[in-house]
Amino acid sequence: MITVELPNVFCSATNPTPLLRIDATCRTVADALREAGRKSPGALDRIMDESGAVRRHVNIFLNDENIRFLDGLETAVPTDATIFVLAAVSGG
Amino acid sequence: MPKTKAAKSRTRTGRTPAKKKSIGRKSKAQQALVLVGTMKGAFIFRSDESRKKWTVDGPHFRGEAVYAMLHDTRGGRSRTYAAATSMHWGPTLRISDDLGATWSSPERQAVRFPEDSGRALAQIWQIAPGRASEPNVLYCGVEPAALFESRDGGETWQPNRGLLNHEHQPKWQPGGGGLCLHTIVPDPTNTKRMLIAMSTGGVYRTDDGGKTWRARNAGVRAQFMPPEQRFPEFGQCVHKVVQHPDRPGRLFLQNHWGLYRSDDWGDKWHDIANGVPSDFGFAMQMHPHDPDTVYIVPIEADMFRATPEAKLRVYRTRNAGASWEPLTKGLPQSDAYENVLRDALAADSFDSAGIYFGTRSGKLFGSRDEGASWTEMADGLPPIVCVKTGTTVAA
Image (cartoon, rainbow over all chains, first blue to last red; front, top):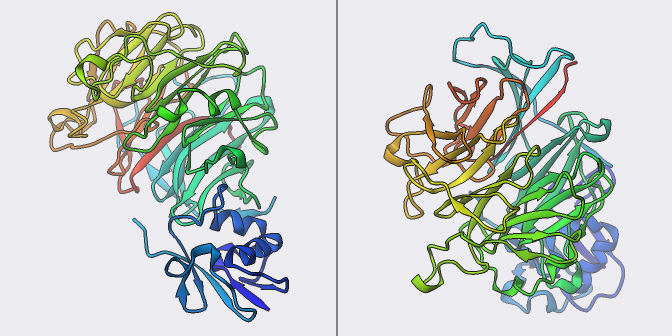
C-alpha cells in the first residue's frame, strides 16, 4: 500500500486526515497522485496545475528523496512507499 | 459548499476632523465597504454613510495574495468575491454571502483552462460584473492573459474561446507583473460589445459577443519598442482603461507611458497628458457620477516606480483630460516614495463620492469629498494590490 501524506492545510470536514492510502497498483509518482486525486480532487488541484505540472513551489518526496532529483513524476514507486507533499521554502 | 471562518474584527477611527456636511443617500441607510486586497490577505473596511469611522476585519486568506475583489449587489444579492493566490498551492476564487464572515472553500478550482489549451491559471487579476440586465453574469481576467465568463453568479466559468485562440496570442508578452488580462469593460447599452486590456497586448474589442476580437490601440505608444515600431497594432503595455456608463463610447486609458482618451470605443486614442508630472502610472478611476472626471496617480518612471518629487499626489481632471489638478490635502508631500498599482484606486457611489487608494507600502487613504481632502485609513498593511468599493444595506 502506498501512502500519500498531504499538508494539514488540505484537511477539511470532508477530508479530515492528511494521509491517503492508495490500494491501487501505481507504477509512478504520477499514477499515485492521480489515485490520490480520486480520493481528494481538490488536493490534486492544489498540487498540480491544469497542465499536469507540479506547482513551482511544491516539493514531492518519495520516501526521503525529492522527486526533482529522481525522474520527476515518472519516478517508479515501490508498493510500500510514502509520498510526502510539502510546501517549498519559498515565501515573501 | 464548505465554509471557513473569517478573521476577527477591530475598530479604526479616521483622523481627519469630520465636516458638518450632508453626504450619502437619504432614502435607505447604506453601509460603505472598502475591500482591500494585499500580498498577504484581504481586509474589509466598513462604515456608515458618513464614512468618518471605519471598522476593519482581516486578514482573510492569511498569507495569500488577493489581486482581485468585487462586491456585487445585482439581482438582490450581497455577494463578495475574492481571488486569493497561495504562492504554494495556486489560485482560488472564493465567494461570501455574509460580507466575509464565511467564505466558500470550493473542492475544485472553478476558473481553469481547458486541457487542450496547454495553459495553466497563474492568477486571477480582475473580477468584473456583467451588465445590470444580466445579474448572473461575471467576468474574470486572468494570467496568462485570458477572459473567463460565468453565467451562474460565479459558480462555474468558461473561457472565451475567441480570445483564447486569437491569432495575436502567441505574440503577447508578460509585463513586470506577468501576462495578465486586467481590465474588462462591457458596453452597458450593447450586449455584443466589450473591451478588454492586457499587459502586454494592449486593448481589444469585440462587437459580436466575444466571437471575434480586434486590437484597438491606434495612437497608443509602445515606448519600449524600437523607434520605428512605437505605434504597433498590438503589443502595448496598457495599465488600465475606465469608462462612465452614462457615456460608454468614451474611454480613458493609463498606459505604460501615456495618458489617453478615446471618443469612439477605442478606434482612435488621443494624448491627454496635459499638466501631469509624468504620464507613466498604473491606477485610473472614473468618477461615479461625472463622465468628465477621472483620477490617476502619476508615477515618475518605469525605471523609478515612485511618486514624482517624493510627493504623494492624486491628479484629477474635470474636463475629460483637457487639464489635470493635483489633490494633496492630507497626503504626504515629502519623502513619499510610493506606488499605487493598477487596481488600487477606487471610488464609491455615494452622492459626495468617496475616493480610496492603497500603496505598495501598505497605506490606505480615503477621501469622502471627491479628493479635496484625504485621511489615512490604515498604515502597516501588507503591500496593497487591490482596492474596491461596495455598499450594503446597514444592519
